[in-house]
Length: 460
Image 1: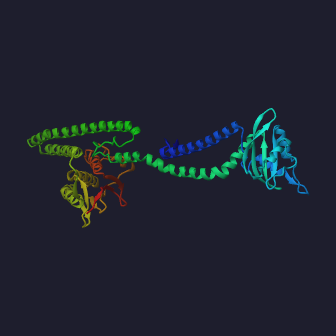
Image 2 (image 1 turned 60 degrees about the horizontal axis):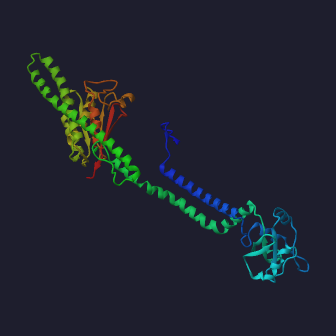
Image 3 (image 1 turned 90 degrees about the vertical axis):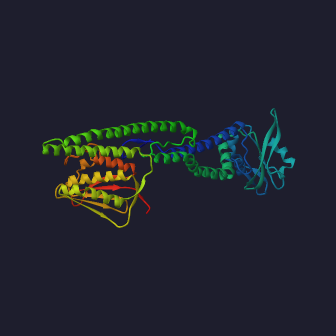
């Protein structure tokens, strides 16, 4: 486990890295156990062959071979040979000149008859040698280069120590096994990440499927049939959770739509009865309250319809949509003593969306800007070719504390202005989320607030 410095939480290791690490450990353990088992087998068998000119025993005897001034072949009693013989009471040895078959003086007397077998032509062999009270015993004949020339070295009765086993194994590894094992191990370690990535490919496919799920297509589910058996139970559980979430969203949207629809009738009745009030000032105030209620109900109904719609989104021209919204709200701006303007290029900007939904979202943002700009203020709507609509006002701006709250339902900020319902910006954010867009706010360099509305742009 590793510590996530950003959140302070403990994050798990990557599955891929863990698998690669575990494979490397398995390779190492397998190789180590194989070598260990091989060593145990050789040690238990008690027959470590000094392969030709290799092996500690052959080296000890070879170092003792010498010739006198008259070229007589002799075995000197070196310190290593004396020590080895002391550790191995039954050890016998015979050295034969490879050229003429002459036995070296100092060889074990009981092995001298072997020199008469004509072994000078034999490079390597196992010989059956009769031993007193022990029957036939295997003797090892190897060929070695010594200071006195090339010799046949015959040994019998050696009790090999662990050092002998290690010496022989290292010689085998160095000359024969390592040139083959090292490339195999390197190839396996290099291949392991590819194998792991290939094994994790179904997870990447599930990741892409999960990323495609959004509030507009909650009915989509992860594909169980193409997933590995180990993941199918988890995928079914996730699909079940998505089914429950989708059902909850559908019930909520249906309730909002029904409630908004039912409210339209009593609002219409109230509007008709307000016309019968004899006091004009009271009637105007009540009509203003009723107008806000009507706007709120229409917004909720529009959002509910957009959330539950199944038809694909239309191809819309963003500049034309913004121009219609600005034209619609221009009388309201004049009535409040404010100015409103549109800045856009000649090139069309196309997006995919619901015209009613996006118009309502932009209308809510612009109406919010007009209320905060106040009498004598101004609002500018700018459409950029990148699919971004900037709504700038000359109001007091947005404090850091308000910036994180104003998109929440029924939040009017720390300094409420006018008589807004607190749902306009929240509905705008929901509508934009349904269009894979987003809305952000910051303070302008010259004062006031700037709302950035961003939508994915379609090709012209």
